[in-house]
Length: 278
Image (cartoon, rainbow, N blue to C red; front, side):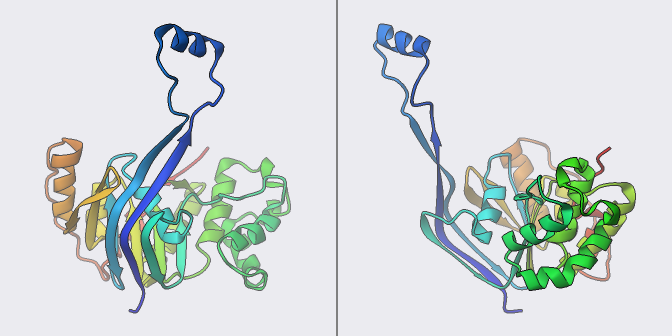
């Protein structure tokens, strides 16, 4: 397995721009108290001096508190956020299941959004043309595919986004835990497809708050805290470390891993928490 992800001393800094024209009340208070107004720009490091190597065959879990930089790490790997310092090298075709449906144009039809979203995922018009029928069939939206998606329910949007994002077998699969995929019938199809994708991928990187799921199908885990990798190793050990040292919680009882036909077969039921909209 030749695929790899190499992150060397990577720092990703964000800027928050405050209101440059404070309200009259704020200006008067600042003048009377002789306090200077707040700096209009706030900078912070979302990821700090990150070093990480992910090789073929690894199923890496990423855990940490909200705001630790987990989703930001996935977005840096895929190239949405290039680091200001350091480097990220990726060998292999990346399929990001991150905020599926981002970039949808709600004035366009479902069919038109197949091509638009496909282009955003780096796929050619010819490629999407060959996959169009399969995407529509999997989504179950045949009767509504030429309707503007502004009339779709949240479940229909989730089904379309999932069907587009998972149509191609990936080399490197990046998965964030939260997205919706539709009704109960679609959930079963989604689980089967996710199982297939995770089993076939050379590298899988999963962000999740579910320690049970992390232990069940990851073979290595890193703990992120305030943008830094503070621990890396065995999934159960890292979950214990996270509970004790980061979350301030008691250690979870150790559960024996189920015997499965593949290292990630359990992902069919646990890899992605799938919400069922009304």
